[in-house]
Length: 268
Image (cartoon, rainbow, N blue to C red; front, side, top):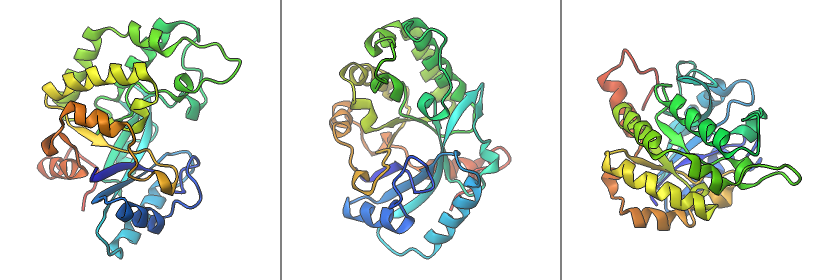
């Protein structure tokens, strides 16, 4: 892998305190990366100011790895993210996180044991991300609460939920991503459950046929995880993805240059 576009700094509450700009760039160089994306959650006030500080840090950085500044924002409604991208002028790109139910601490469905309700919620959040200003869908169909359930809490089985997701609805969603020019993330989270990995491989194959690109991201919260894709590397090989299939924030920058009146994300 040459790019890791999903790395959290210490500004994200989920990341370790050691995840400073300097430590991340050094780890990225050791991992053989050429590009690294610093994305944080909006769960502390001042994400815009933090991004400005990161921007200043990279202005003086000298090294083999190019640093991008992004954000991972929760989907909170129809075409709405937790923070409007226009309020993050230092961001090069935006990841839309569609299933962070454990982070926002909101009950995702009324009946936790109903796989149909879960399937509808997962798809609705993914559909709502389209047109939100995001460039990439982060870890699609992955929900931490389903892969790592809380002991004593009865939830629908993930395999049963995936079986309730209608292929025609997925196809329409993928077509909307293709029209918007949005990418899909491939991360180690895609391989944390055998059923999810198999399901996603089918979705990714359809996406590739539609010309949708893929962003590679480790979702690293500690230094040792930067550039570590694990089984996701095998998934990428099986999909036979080439360089033209892999997304980079440069595409967001070029789109902004073509339509400056509609894109508020600043590039470098």
